[in-house]
Amino acid sequence: MSDAPQQRLALKDIIMVCCAVVAPLAVVGGMFRADGNRSAQIDTNTRRIEVLEAANQAKTDLLTKIDGRTIRIETKLEMMAPAPKMAAR
Image (cartoon, rainbow, N blue to C red; front, side, top):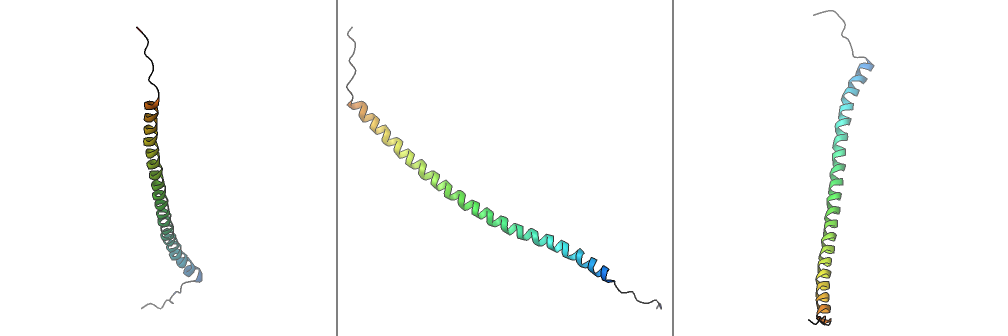
């Protein structure tokens, strides 16, 4: 055994070790927190896109019905119009 006195860690060494441990933990915690926010934002955007797609489909269906009705009306008008007279030969 040596007779050398046992050295104790100085306060600055303890602070440096704490900073070396706390900084990476803060970075990892921030990543988990950001990932949670990102997941919530993705869920919100997905819901909004689904609502917009449903509204777009409803508009498309309405326009298809209007087109069909317009075609029927045009056909009736063509049938009601007098036939053009043919030129005498």
